[in-house]
Image 1 (spheres, rainbow, N blue to C red):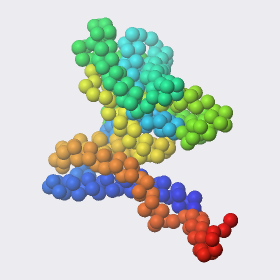
Image 2 (image 1 turned 90 degrees about the vertical axis):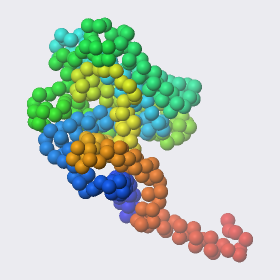
Image 3 (image 1 turned 45 degrees about the vertical axis):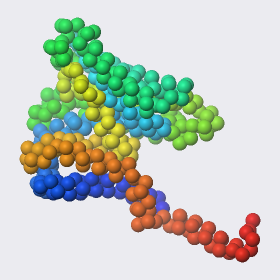
Image 4 (image 1 turned 90 degrees about the horizontal axis):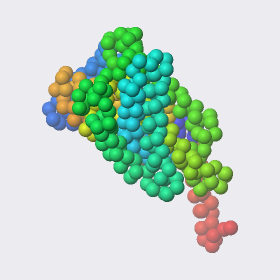
Length: 377
């Protein structure tokens, strides 16, 4: 009974977070004179109403899965990787740059090389805060935030000053990559009504399985979780916390880098100047928190966020609801996830654990028996 109640509460917390976010979003819409029923209907129609919209929803969810997986790995080791945006951008720039340097290589060679290059670029960007944390005790939060800005402006420098003019269509955009480096699948796009969904979706699904296997079935995954729970006890048990810290950040950056790869080689097919940090980084963080860091949870929450984002545009055109309200709904969902402790306490009162009640009852009984006896030993 105890284990079942705990599992039910773990499922109910994110579900209730979503429901409460949608309810308050509906109240806000009504308060500003919009019909929430029509608004949410427009959202569903825009994101799931036909094959093309479903394809775009899947396409939008693909990079979120990668960045969420990256955050979940670092979070399991006890670190808050805020640098997912910069790491994803590294993957985007590296993969597209390599595709432009070797445009005529056979696809069977060029595409895997570009994917690997993007993953390695993201890993390298994450290794910097990992090494600084492991050997100098610096805050990974501060370092990764600063790395986001470094990578953002460095990417603009690479495009405008380092990249040959023959690789650029303008000062702000590179040429499109050749088909040999593209993740585009004509058959998949046609199946989903001409949407931009691409082979990155299959890579994301594979990534979910790989992360599950690493974290649950390997020694490295056990060490990452152990260091996250108690680094001092892990050291006492013979684990190298420094090595685990660096490896967890490198793995985190690898998956974040792949999020940028699917944007560059799949969705956009080129690279262009970014005016701000990639939203897939911060959205991936939220997706991971909502999904409790589990593979199945990340998949479902990535689809939910994608529905909200793609459907939010439909709310504007179909119901006249400002897109900002959609952002408020997303923020509310994140807020309720952030206060999950309070929600768990409330659920525990509604669905108490029998064994916990028995322990409390025994303690109270033994305390009552000792009253007036000067305390017992």
